[in-house]
Amino acid sequence: MFKYKCLNPIAKVGLNNFSDQYQAVDNIDDADGVLVRSANMNEMEFSDNLLAIARAGAGVNNIPVDRCADEGIVVFNTPGANANGVKEMVIAAMLIASRDIIGGVQWVSANAGDPEIAKLTEKTKKKFAGTEIAGKKLGIIGLGAIGVRVANAARNLGMEVFGYDPYLSVDAAWSLSSDVKHVTNVDDIYSKCDIITIHVPALDNTKGMVNAEAIAKMKKGVILINLARDILCNEADVLSGINSGKIRKYVTDFPNTVIAGHDGCIVIPHLGASTEESEDNCAVKAVLQMKDYLENGNIVNSVNMPRCEQGICTGPRIAIIHKNVAGMIGQFTQVLGNDGYNISNMTNKSRGDHAYTIIDVESTISDDIIKKLKKIDDVIRVRVVRKDV
Image (cartoon, rainbow, N blue to C red; front, top):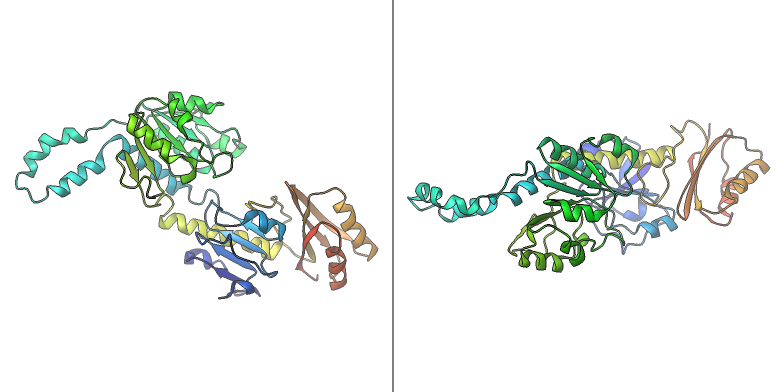
């Protein structure tokens, strides 16, 4: 019986994927796996029972990823599960920033009681006139699951699209419209584009990437969209850009006291991925990834461990999280060989300082052999996925 804890409400369509071999628990210390959305886990202490944390979403800044790796806890996320919801919000952001739809609607509401509102509308509407997005140059920083969808949709809307991503994956490249211009220098995005949208993770080297220096390179009247993470933009510099007329509109999904209510800022209450469909997709993906790890030992879409798969577990299987140092595989095979275990299949993958090994053997796994494997230097966690044939 596996036990799981939900730290946030998780869509039922996801939880329905758990079989009767899974039990929800109230105490996180009893859980083999944790499902989370926005709850802050950074200050939490974890019991030895915890094997996995699955984030129903892409960002994991609310989870102590590195500490989890050192404790042998695999952290999953669900990249791409909410991509369509965010893509649609980006398209909406471009439209409401290019045309003063919000200002126009607010004017109508303010004058709703005026019997002459119809006549006044014809005289006033020019104040809210904007520009169309067709024919405009859109710059996309980050061509992951969301960025690629935005690029392709923008091309279908008649925009000229430029994309920047030094780490463009093969899958993303295959999905990207051939009409998108892939640039190798982000300065080309800043200098050429009428609208710029950011779709990169929050890392040390991306924090504050849109600052006074970047803004100075942008076209006058640029529209800047940030539905990724608030810390990607230096908001004091953005406000200076708005006040100087360099930035026409700043659209963000992250309200705070610096930008909320400021002229030139359109601040959305974190709705980018808040659709029923996105929440359902994230929940399903998080649950299935956690199940695959708990039941089979497979790791897919982990942010702190390598991708490592060895199919469905049909017999005795051992999973080992360890440091990525030389000689580990030899030590595992020697310990198993000395005790008469024949290895039928083995997979090893590494990522940074950590590595993961899945070993299938042909006889029942004893408690003694697990103790011997745990005693090997630089082993972090040894888990029996299935004990017997």
